[in-house]
Amino acid sequence: MADRVEGATIGILGGTGDQGRGLAHRFARSGLAVVLGSRDAGRARSAADEVGHGVRGATNRDCVLASDLVVIAVPWDGHHALLTSLAADVGERIVVDCVNALGFDKQGAYPLAVDEGSACQQAAALLPTARVTGAFHHLSAVLLKDPTVDEIDSDVMVLGDDRDATDVVIDLAARIPGCRGIYAGRLRNAFQVEALTANLIAVNRRYKAHAGVRVTDVSP
Ligand SMILES: NC(=O)c1ccc[n+]([C@@H]2O[C@H](COP(=O)([O-])OP(=O)(O)OC[C@H]3O[C@@H](n4cnc5c(N)ncnc54)[C@H](OP(=O)(O)O)[C@@H]3O)[C@@H](O)[C@H]2O)c1
Image (cartoon, rainbow, N blue to C red):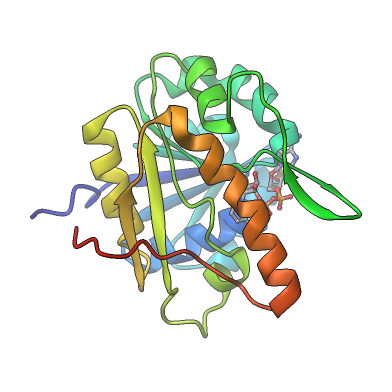
């Protein structure tokens, strides 16, 4: 089957952060054009230069406008305000939200109650014309960024209500060596996927790991 993401430009909002730079590294190495977004264009350009592989940097707004598909990789705290400010610019693009609505205290990470149900559902509410999906919640930024890591041993659970959009994102996930994109349900089931990250953080702390997830008995 044809690669449905071939030729697309991927924009990453909050792309100066660990997860944004990690995803940019993998997507750009696979041959896709990537633009890192930031609240500060200079910071975006510095981060893009650091990632290399032709990655460019821009303000978050210019990043959206330059992209076919937009990944949201900002902390939960900044999610609502950023998406509200960019809703008109995002338009009908495919959006991939990898934000985990988590809190942290002395006991570790825990899922937060979100009025809309999850970060993904909040994105869908704030970007009503966009084709919102969720993916990459469980991939470790440390592994994504590390140029000595050739393959990441993990599946990517892809959520969304638009079949074409989730199919594109499944192909985007397959751009990361070792990863498979697996359709994992509609946006109303994103809460569990985001919350599972709290369990993985606990695993990582206990076992000094960068754990991922595998879905068994599936041959997509
Ligand atoms: N780190 C991981 O391993 C990992 C794995 C899976 C999913 N995630 C998810 O990915 C998201 C990003 O994680 P991260 O570790 O990369 O976070 P991060 O480094 O703390 O932040 C990413 C970027 O977001 C921007 N930002 C920070 N606060 C903001 C605000 N209030 N409004 C708008 N932009 C803001 C900053 O860029 P500028 O200052 O340049 O604008 C920052 O570099 C999180 O929601 C996390 O749950 C992370």
